[in-house]
Structures are given as structure tokens and as C-alpha cells.
Image (cartoon, rainbow, N blue to C red; front, side, top):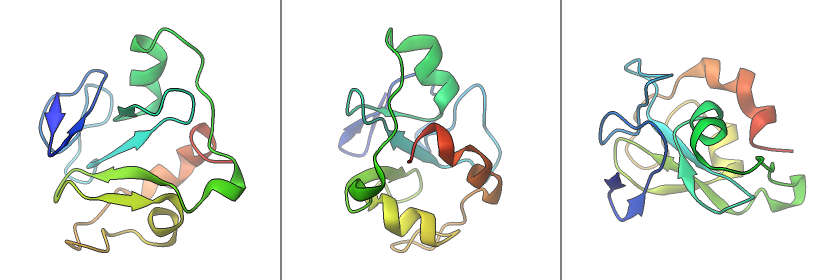
Length: 107
């Protein structure tokens, strides 16, 4: 699904990047996976639809833009995303529970 200027793959259900797996009001980010440089709403979407194993971003790559805000459709660096529970551009709240899944995406 095209969201802003970015294609988001997986089981996307709306233009706020929600998917079949995570679709609460706060589930509004997509992650660009290091292995394919493609955005997916979650690790499960990648696992079920990408056709290859996921690779996490290395710690030294934290300045890479790899997070897409589903509210304003701007890209965030990994560092900016991990430092806040809101989008630095539009102040939309992110799901604080996503911190439990960072190891699927970031080293």
C-alpha cells in the first residue's frame, strides 16, 4: 500500500500503517527492514510475506531513516524513534509496547 511517498508491504489495513497483527490507535509506524530496505508494519508481516529472513539494523546504523510515522508519513531515524514515544514532527503518540519488539528490528 502506498502511504505518503513510501510503499508499505505486508498485511496493511490502513494508511496509518496499521496491520492485521497490530492495529490499535497507537500502532502507527512502519519499519524499514535492513535486509530488503522495504517498509513493513511489523516483524510478523515481514515474516509472513517477505520471502526471506529478516535482518536487524546494526547499532552503528542508528542515524539511518528506517521508521515511517503513519500519522504524518515522515521518516524518522532509528535514533529519533527510539528516543521518544511521539513523532518529532507531528507529535502523534506511538505505542510504548513497541519497545518490547525492538530486538526484531534494531541491534
